[in-house]
Every structure is written in C-alpha cells, then in structure tokens.
Image (cartoon, rainbow, N blue to C red; front, side):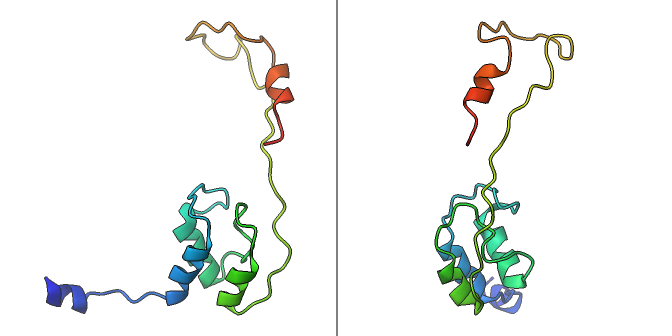
Length: 111
C-alpha cells in the first residue's frame, strides 16, 4: 500500500492549501463553489477572483499568496423574498396559523 500510495500520488499546487487556510472555513457555498476548498482551487487556477468569498474581510493575504493586487470586494448579495403562490398554486399539506400574506417575510428582509 505504501508503494502504491507513493507511485499514484497526485501532486497539487501548494498555494491551494495556503489559500484555503486564509478562507473562513464556513463552506457556505455563497461564492458559488462547493465549499472553501473548491473556491481555493478556483482562485489558484484563475477561474475566480481573490475577492470571490463573500464572508472574508481580508483579501490582501489571499492576493499576496497569489502574487496579485486585491481589487475591491465583490458586492454583497442579499436574498429577496417575494410571494410566488398561495393556496391556489400549491396543495395545502399543513395547517398554518401565521400571517396569510408575505408582509412578515418582507419585513424581515435584508439578510
């Protein structure tokens, strides 16, 4: 097994581990990649900018590892809840005793 593991070892760019260590480790997917490792691989390959993580505040460290300048951070995205249906559009499966329109959800918007 030891011989096979050495012979079949896949070499990877050490910068991937460095960039991943600088990311928050939340694995939230807010950047559009499957976790912080996926984003680190994309940053190192050039498929994503160093500012792609919406959680990280300090992009300068990542930019330093990559040997580029950190540009301005990506614009923060906030989910917007909109009414898309009611009892006519969906079959009722539960008894709901809350507000009957989307005003409560709209009042809680903003992230």
